[in-house]
Image 1: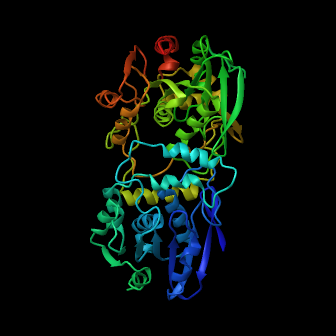
Image 2: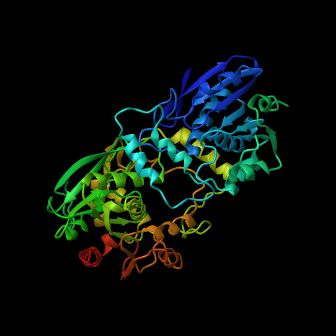
Image 3: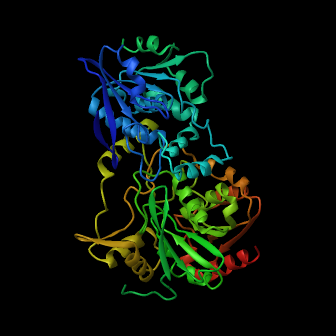
Length: 214
Length: 301
């Protein structure tokens, strides 16, 4: 595990598999960690790096409690700088972050695989105006027993994700694979999957991963 | 402190309130046993911007003013989001232990309004002084910078900016407080040099080469799909009366009509008043007139 500078802090970047082939950068779901990709890593022909997002795993909680997918994407961008060119795989919140990064850094990301998982939907296409959750959040941060991940991360389950915003990143990306298992998907996912650079992939993560390399 | 300003009174008390791991600066005027009234300053301002306004309200209330995270004497977080700033207001209200009146200017008015939506049990009446959000996308006041690029290009620019600037502790210093105040005056030409010199002395710190604002250069900077049209529909949920005030003179930092009227139409129980011969900073330009309207409104609670 290596700590890399990111913003005003550091995040933990784990090498799950060494190898000379193409690099895969793995981005976990909300509440998860780099370890979630241990099984998948064994099936990739090259090096596999996996990030612990801020507030998760071996990465520190963000001082002041601010979390958004874009801030997670900024951490992932720091990891990408460390990785060099890399394929991306993301689950849940990590899938949305992978979309943002694949569209933002297209020259360095040949393809990205988006898998379902916690934090995939966000809060829907526009804000909802009933917000009791945030008071619960304050109480959770004041609890005496420290939870496994920062309760403030739940902001990444209620943030608006407009489909047209997601689509901008899909249109700018080089190649996106969307794992489909027949389950319902968020409007942002469907809008991004309809881009010319996008294709549906099998719902089984291993089968989908095998389609990531050309 | 060497310069004074007519009507300006330093706070009587100062303390810190901890919110989400940050130490936030709170200053107070008036009787500590009085009915609480919390003031929220605007973007790049600080609690001491209320030094002429707060004493007028303190004749009747225990007046508190919070330095927003990254501003004044409050801690700097690692990153900024709107809703953590709102939660800071909620935390200060919770710490008071009894419902308070909430009065905010500009960005502080927006934070106060969202805090009132989130924690109605802690807010008696709400006053927003030209705190009605930025204009719709694609409309910028003269002289405002417009960012160019596709959405992914703008996010890439944020990543690059964050990587190179987030560790920066200050902007370029001004050689003197007089010059720092004069530079601010280019942004806010309606405010007098005399006021801004007073304000700068309380909102600046000395570094090598001169003076800089205490504010975090990273303050309130971020990126996301947020849209101005999302602001006002939420105001339908306000459960307390709201007083909306603004200056009747054009000012690049205020929200003009038709947008102001369109947004305020969402507020269920609303009173409004324009302040004559004032721009965006009504509480600084016309403290007595503004305080009289606020006291009248709150006195009817």
